[in-house]
Length: 492
Image 1 (cartoon, one colour):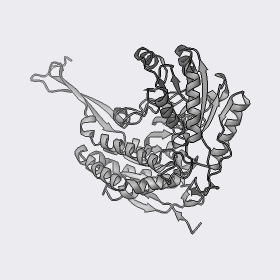
Image 2: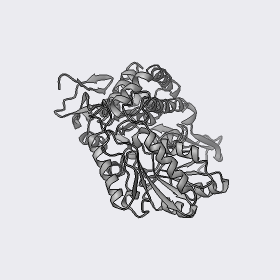
Image 3: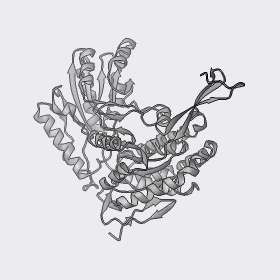
């Protein structure tokens, strides 16, 4: 292990070697090469980070918001200046194409930009003379020490859903990045170290389940943010809630698109292929099911089959590659077993992406784009998050049947409609029970000034990430009723 870099934690403004006895190799999924080793930090190390954050909190919350955001302006400049380097690291450890890595970092930087508006976004409201000589005010105050637990699929973007808003609101923030992809945030925190933030305002603690549980159980951690699978999201939400913490836990998805006969088939096919196979299908807004209505079936199926077959798969560092590997050998095995399950349930394999070998990258974890046609609506696969480049096709006769299938799903992250009909579009967005809606859009990813919503088993909590929801989550409301009368009275 000595020949590879051992990642450190960033606690109290210092880089510190973990006392962990267990380390996990961080591998390039395109080559199986070991890039570094990440520690499974101890609960005692989490406590050290929390204590440092708590010690910094009083001074940081008293720092005027106009001063707090100056650090974010500098962070934005540093992220932009080092964007190519950060994207390269993301591609190395995550497998996505370099263009995808660059795109996700840009979306993360958008959140830094929005958070610089805290002096306005954090404003409360007031009213004079609610009664004679009595005024009432609502102020927003920071929550305290907060933490985020982030996933492997967007190592550059998702931590930035949380960190900028948390510290701009006056909180002190601890990040536990995915142990599968810790290099991106390790580099970002090297840039954060250049900001000159007070010690303890931000910390990074690497680790696995023990590290997560230590954050969930620590009495001084007031709020938890999480993104990952639904079972783990539910676990994190439940344990955080039992311990009296605020929690926003984004879970899994089974995102569906509906294709009506009046859709522009050429453009729809391109968009759906990008949505399904971009990032190797490893994103919470990837299209996993396409429902064709009526006459849309034949042309859409033929065009999408061609798009799946032609998509170039390989190392994300190759500029000609359109799709990289999946994250681990275990993920590859799981995805391929689900493809076999779908075929076993009667679906026709139009394109089979199993047993993929890429020349020059024979040790990589590749699954080519896969299409399962005529999947039964009652199939278990319709309700299972595959998290890979697999698209299932279902055919129905009308839009009502399609919407009914979407609403029957236990997930509620995203659904999209492709059509030329305004009436159909309005019906769909009104009736579909999901949090993010796309009309002629394949990935309905909200901009940073809108919340990243999710319904049903796709989200546990109340306030979502990004935008005004983030301000609500990272602040507590304090209402003040005060009397300054000309003449004193007991009358209210």
